[in-house]
Image 1 (cartoon, rainbow, N blue to C red):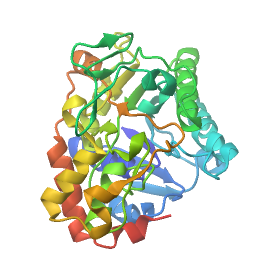
Image 2: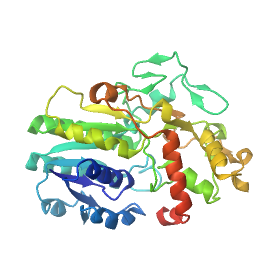
Image 3: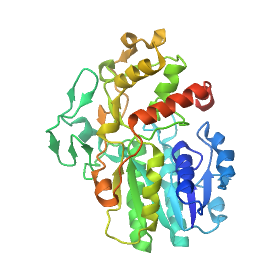
Image 4: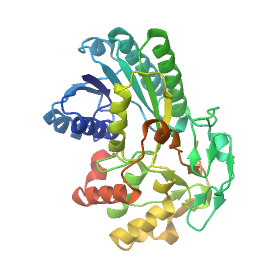
Length: 360
């Protein structure tokens, strides 16, 4: 089987490519990446050493896409993943062009090749207003959902696939949501299988962490490097919570999806670390202090609080409920939060200049 992986030199896609080959060494993987994310160039040669055919280019380049050999499946991981993209001074037109119209180009390839399609989507398709309205309580270390609370598409276990996707969801979230709709429409219209995998926060060693994306990696690397850190929004408390998932845990279910030819399973499914793999920034700081010793002076917990201002599209609590994935695919994450954090920590210790490499 021949699989086209877009954004293959990014963190998630590069991990998935390696993991797919570990599960099924006879796969042929062709990858496209425009190397727009600083640090992604470090994955080119390691992937080629595994036999991946890496093409440097953009999913918006029709001549490049036309030059590709026919593939049996497309795994679409190419996107600008920042929730602030398009409103942080970067081009909103470029964001839409890359995240949405790039996906349309890939769907046209599926139509041409009669290939299946998997879209790596995001928790950011869920309504920000609806999430901000959830009855969140506050403990000393995190925002929490009361154990007995529940409502349409949500509970203590997290957000389900039925939760509202009503705007606002951010420009990034909207491009992914529109890509989901178009992928499903293309699949129905032209008779090829489509899977939409909505992922929680992905994290692991080698991630190109920044303050607005890859927060677990960014925080741990910055703590060890004694770089300034700060809590932003929500009273400068650091209580905002996210779940955490290692992308390699998705490889086995991706292969099962590719092999499945029936119409008996839902096309849109959440995959995340869930409540068990969730953590607040304040808790992450405590973990860093316990693991790496006392904080640098400017990262003293008493000084981390910074601002009451909330960044656009920020939310206090974002945990996905993956019970549908467990019910329909028998899937559960294998990497625990501690395993993921320790993996990132070890990588940071071995690569002290990592933040310089991937900044920008």
